[in-house]
Image (cartoon, rainbow, N blue to C red; front, top):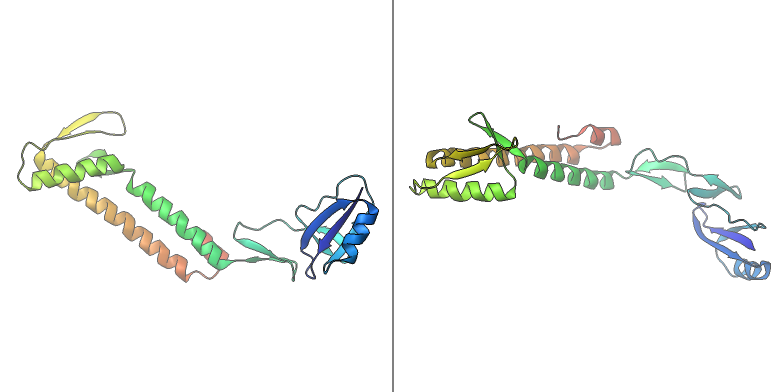
Length: 193
């Protein structure tokens, strides 16, 4: 069994074929690609390689997930647009996690996951409309259950709004930094923390 590695003019491997000598000859006669033939029973390892001067060469290690190998110049180049999109997604996730975690009010940690946000909004609204029976029961992160009366529901609702607003403002500011970034190092320096 023989192996032929087909590659384009930049050295990028486009196809690998394992076959008999006669089939390899037929394949190499009818192709527009360059090729290297190997007379070996063992499979030829082409993963992470390109062709240079008729030989298989290892692609150097990728500097970051945002780099793409440029086969023409045989170097890694950053794809800044891809990197920015990836960073936008990272910030969106961090914003959502922050928003849905918890916030402080009156010395207590108030959970702000989606179900608690709905509960806080509903009871805050009832309390604003004068319903004094609006009582909020929340279990904080320590497992302690607490009761909050109607007037507290309004204050907790307002603090939740501030918490969510702060999360979005922080994300917006970081996204402006991402848009302005022109290098990999600038993007790496942008973080939620």
